[in-house]
Image 1: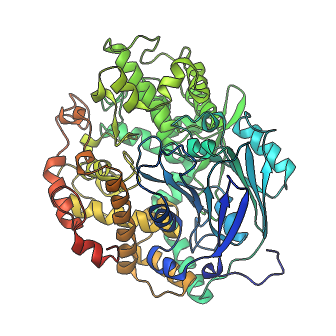
Image 2: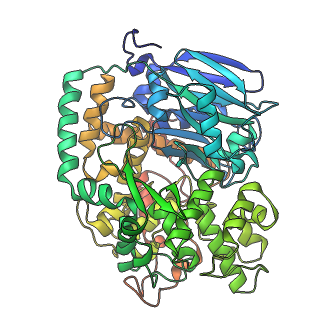
Length: 597
């Protein structure tokens, strides 16, 4: 596509099918019926995976699919419309898995004329895919295989085009580490679930994209009005206008600690004695150099820090927690450098830090023999490097906390759901958020149903964090909305400022499909149920909708003391409201209503 070409609407976008085994590339038009039912992004990715991946496939075999997808608002004027999604079967959890990233590559995939890129098979030698608008080529990648993310990105841009954007794996993905991410813009991650290991198993080093075409929408006037209103809402909201732009996501450190929900020493406590020292305020004061924005983002939560004389990306709130309080570490400069190591290697910082914290408690309780101690950073950077290269003890930790804890005879010490490590909010402090962890289709995830908003931040309205009543309905609402958002694809932070009707107006203007808030949530519900069906056919059923036993024991102190999770009180109502049976299986009636029968 070139600047002279007619702007392309989403329903004329192309799906690329790339066979790495045969070295062939096939183009097919995006199915318009698929748009109406699944929109794009996560929706189309999950539908494609469900329809084309037989049950029981090894996630690291050539038979697994790796799908990059964008949505109908991508690369438009809608705020934060630069995001994209990767969908695959996770080697860490065995579940259906999607991972969402900001940066710029999503906008360039769309500007090149594509809605999705489906990678199949495995190349005999390392390769990367080069997309230059209409021209698509599988190229040899031996010269960057083994290189870290920064070096690989620079070399691939030098070899292709200065205006290109790169999504690549580092050594962790190449070594099939189950905590491996796919990195873009050097320190933005399609994180969690080992999606980078799937890419490495295909001998696919990178996706490099230059897209110069223009994107058309069906109703420019409607979209223009909606976007103007949206930008006013972002400026009006204190979270999107002040907190995130000034402090970034680390603004949450002190707040989580105040509520007794900042997990410390592998979730043994909910408060950290030096939270202030690793807070967003302290990061801004000591290490921050500048901020940056993803494509089309008026919020600008990204930041560059300087640590040990080197400029690095981040760290984000989840990373500060995982490599800090989770491991008893209060050295902010070290945390920033550890984050940088993970980015260079291409590894998910949440699972890396949480697994190290699990190992520290295994050692603490005499279950494991290693030189690991809460609060001690000695040798940890080397351990992280060993995790990325699958060496020695690092190879053991690179399998994730569930496998590690089971191997050492203490499975209850892994703070995970369905194999995915739980992020930086102790579930004892927010009942709805806890239910969201337990029922997440991809495992322990805070973004499937971010009830920290209403339960802790009071956004859009405050609800009682301790009451289980009414939480099932709220979790379902947020899960359906998150699925829809990942299908048209926008940043989750816009939740603080926008309503479901705002989102529906964006989608309607871009696609020409008459969608209101209710029908948008129905699309999200369809995606959620299809993911559930994928997991069920893989043998992952309602028995996995649970939290580690630790959360049945009250915390002794802090803002969440004397509380436990009440999953057993909320789960039956959740299943009933979902239209599932008592074992958590969607009923025939619900599937028929959603067009999934």
